[in-house]
Image (cartoon, rainbow, N blue to C red; front, top):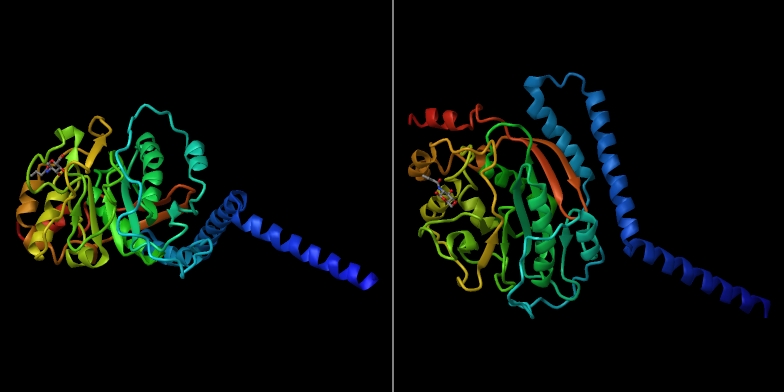
Length: 371
Ligand code: BGN
């Protein structure tokens, strides 16, 4: 009698312990605690690195920082919630997609967005619960001083991507210095960091201020690079010119490597996307676009950002895209990671990409090619 009470007690205790552990692992609180611990561990690691490497001379800064980045990256483990590899494949076209009501009038708080997306994993990752996605998608957003646009993007795009049954992660790449903005170089950095984070197969490079108005505009890669902002309200839902390749583009890993990524030498506004179009054509690919009726998108209207003025050099650079493509891009990318932080809604990459005065700068490249 006594021994059967003992056994029952043991079974109860084991069930409770198991249930409680499972609850903790699944709960948001646990994830937040894990993240806080993870980020403070990173900071701790960073401060030890600087203390133990006092001779990190400024001339060696890039080498030192990259070494630090390598160390920190070792620590960056993707926190994966039980992924069942035996799940059936997701359908090519997810169900229940259609027009969306996009209004920019909301005053979104990050907490609200977090509470509306309970299934997100740290760093703004998500994958479908009941099927295995056909592609693994990294979303790369170049960024500087656009907090409210980012909140709007996160508010609309997390539900959009989850509705599309995407296995995805969001990477916000922030340029630190006050020098001219370099959208294309930030895209290359986002790609280079994301590729080490997870086995992504598809990379979607998007501005922070464009929101698709229809869930059927699938954020996916295809046999050719894709341009998905081909029907924007700002341009009256038409292509302003045939070769436009701005706003949102999608490349498989192979396609992006084939074009050697974006050019690194476009400082300031305009032209880097037109140059990428030339790279695609030069490498024998063509640009695909979704049907214009389902690709309708809204752009948040705003003034040109200070620090993103046009230099007037783009036209000249685009003309020489074919000559430069194998020398200027992913294979000549120089940058220094300042930090990589896993937020609940996205992974933030803060990066020093220089000021255009190094060898990979506009002037450097112009000299290199005697232009
Ligand atoms: C074009 C820009 C593109 C931009 C589109 C839409 C240039 C190059 C000039 C030689 N191209 O004019 O970068 O995506 O407008 O805004 O500036």
